[in-house]
Image (cartoon, rainbow, N blue to C red; front, top):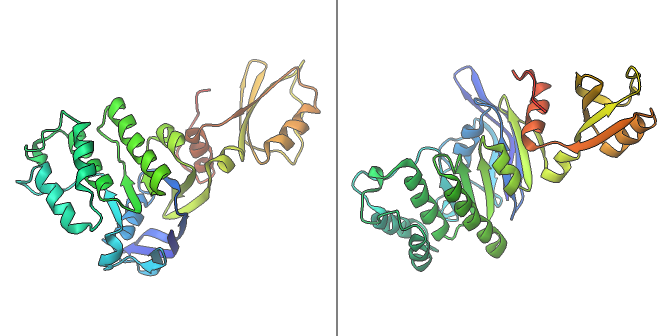
Length: 299
């Protein structure tokens, strides 16, 4: 659904995006992750039509995004910093969204509003807490019946109960209506629960773009112990990191996990445990190869 091909965007001499390629399939929940300054917000602003790329193409459903009013009526955006009109309350914002989105479902909006009794719809939105403002943004966006939602740090400021409730609304829309979601967040533990595809970004480029299942089987944590010193590992095993605690060696191995397990098993360890990595651990070790400033990780 989203196709970003060879996109470059410079601000003076600084290349915020450098020949960026990104692809999001229809119906996917795509997690965009990366360190601060990687270019995540910049590419999101291109997808929103705020920025125009210096070169390359940014399309949604094959249509260029920039200055495409009809296309923008088909997707909703929740930025990290949400704008509301100064004097507008929640009901005023609902009327505004109805004017923007032809498919806006007022009945659905009022039904969702009933689920959030702490939000006073007649109170100016800008006077609400940051968490409540995010709740209003979710209500408005979901009631717009979008085909695509673009979320930048969407649950920042929400308590755990509200985060779960918001993701439940989004997941229901994905399951029932085929909603496509692009979400950028630093909360990797939460993304791991909801995303089926992940793009790891750094220095204005996508380093890795895979399904979460493929990503989690491409890097493995293997804990081993030997009766004596650890022998030399076979040359075809690519070890990203090795940590030794007493007689137990923890290896972060890149590649097909079963092949590594067979090769290490042939060395006759007295203990061997193969464990999947979390998305946070994958993020740290993948960026470790990009000179990202990460030291040790606690196992």
